[in-house]
Length: 218
Image (cartoon, rainbow, N blue to C red; front, side, top):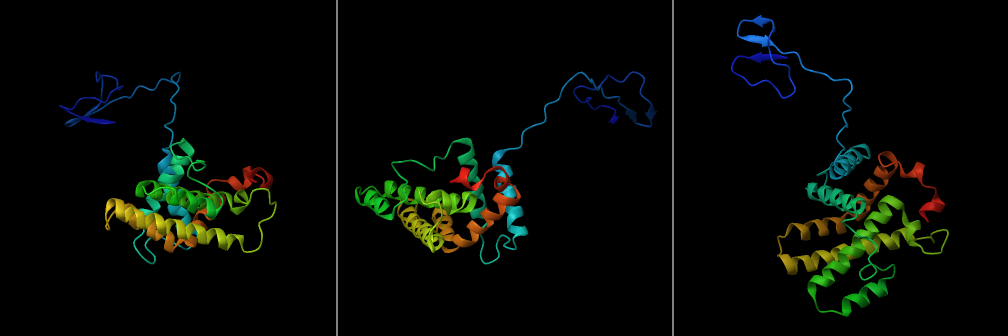
């Protein structure tokens, strides 16, 4: 490395005593101790997911902002997946999530709290989004070994509806221009697109298809 006169040597550098001078510059010999084990920094979980999701969008021919601005959906998806991995997000909360429409609507009707209604719809929508995108619909079918015909469309429809209702309640809670309300509405309109991107990501970047058998996923 080259140090200019007047500059402080980098931490870990050997003081310049016999450096070769070239005009106003001198060479610094950096100390390299082979006995010191350097542990590489772990990649941030959020960065891993946002990078994988963006690459999957490009690979699958569905890049960002193709039909409308949706960079916010990318960030939301990466944050959601990172939350699942780190335990911040619990997609199986029994007090919020249910595999049956009737149970979901019953929970909403039991309360007049708009915030709780928003949380119920959002939790169920997120559950379907991750389940359909990462683990496929077989994880949602209970004891049925094979998903009945049309179940994919039915579950997709539920996801779209839940995100739509979540968006409506987000507007009431946080205002019509709230960012989260816009994200929920975009997820509702283009639910199929985003789940397809997640399916691509799960196979190409998460390698879940190689690590988990269909029985283990079930």
